[in-house]
Image (cartoon, rainbow, N blue to C red; front, side, top):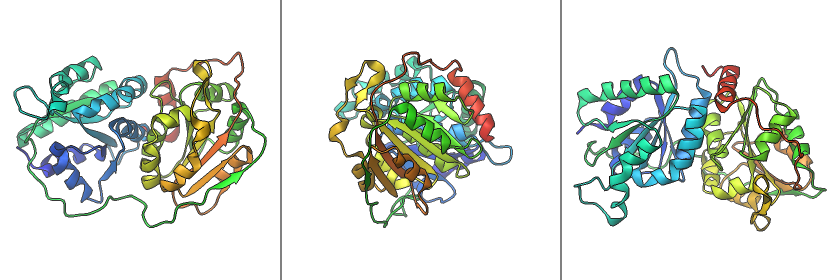
Length: 389
């Protein structure tokens, strides 16, 4: 058994200062220790997939201190691996955005546990191996910590992909929680009043051209959701400050949050879609609570899964702006008028994340190309552009 401080401080020496996750009783000492150190950053995620995407955003930002790279850790119970499969297989793997995973081993064979862990316990190692994530047991002796972290960072640096430590019961000694609340969470502000603007709905193309006009390359990063949103942005103007998700549906917003928190020198714009937003609505609460003033969330709502044939979503019955307001966003706009985008970017004195939902028409150019630049190359280009490496 080790002390939480022994691992966390050894990890800090290697650049690990960002943590995100969903609690498990095995992780309690870690979370308690990190929460009580203001120089470390812990984000309480709505689900494990959001935590992985958020730490991917930290990795995308890339800037470190001195010769030490900035690194992040996603923590989860092994039952949460199911929630994390999509970002682990189509975001971190595809773009080569490394992170350390600490996965608890509930239901470890031979160790009595609750019935819901009876299947996941035995297959946890197999799940990691199937996702091509190398793993080892979490260290339980002080002299094991440094070598384990060195193996993890060496793999992460050489491959750009995650590495996992699987934590057994009793690996870390208890650490008392002496602080209530969460650092970095905005509290006490009144919910933003939703402002609504009627007008004539425009196409996605028109909306994206307006976004480009508001996102100068030298100070802004634009992350576009999977599907036609990213493809059409690429077709209009493939700029080095843009990244196009190719999978990991719904992960553009937690990824943008990780980037915005770790890189306050940049304005970070998340271009979302109604289908993607509906898939991970829990992240609205995380964005509202932690979202900094440099985070812009624009949801282009056409009421359809257009890239898969135009099947309708349920978005027409959802008031996304009111949800954003209730979750703590500092600005919440809604409407059919393309001027909503101007108001979203131009609003002054916004102390927190800003949100707008723009209702748009369906329809996409028939010759819409797929990006010719690979995900790895678009990530590397963006990191070079923002000085992330």
